[in-house]
Length: 99
Image (cartoon, rainbow, N blue to C red; front, side, top):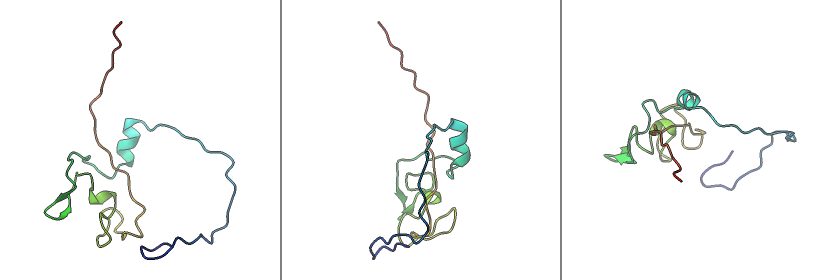
């Protein structure tokens, strides 16, 4: 376990070799299903009245914004919460090549 005031300590869990890793791209629907920010992030603001802004870039549903807060998704502390995926809805952009 790592705390803010200590050095990183190796895990005592058994080590295993990784034989294969596969990467892929998530579809827009998969991203929306996995996201904890529904409605999505819409504001560039980080804070509002001294607190992390809901639907802002530091939305507290993605994890605690500071060491004194709790996560709005898992109620974990700054140390306990692994962080959660959010998403931003973007408009489609079509690039056309003109010769």
